[in-house]
Length: 157
Image 1 (cartoon, helix red, strand yellow):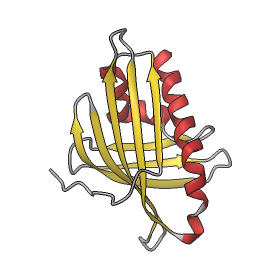
Image 2 (cartoon, rainbow, N blue to C red):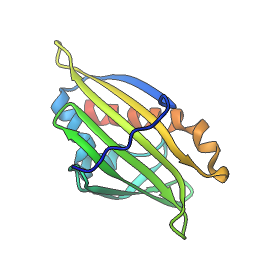
Image 3 (cartoon, one colour):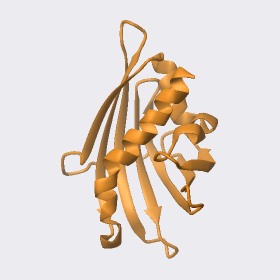
Image 4 (cartoon, rainbow, N blue to C red):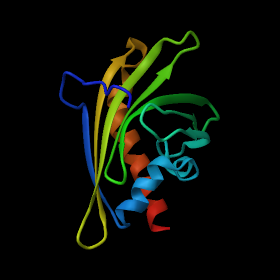
């Protein structure tokens, strides 16, 4: 297992959602590339490339395509996967030189409810943020929230 980074601060964002789907199904949508490609990214964005090596130490890569056609590659690493209850991963966006523009650390937990639904909790912490990407801090909540809206639509389809 890859060493898990330990942020030395509280999460920058915490979101809690309830999905009307079993925990196994919601969890699978986070580790199956065909499903993740359908919900990853803010509202209006698509993910024409979605490659996941969903295991501790495994990397992932997603190309988010904006409505205007701009493609933003992003990736990360899985640090911990406890099927079907927890995913710990990092995300990054780099410039053409390999410099991190933004790097985040995420803990996603999945809790089954007695009525067959799933409580999801996302804790997101910014590890690095380039000055020119300072707006990313403000957009985190909207970006994650609209991604989770898309996941909710996928779960109820």
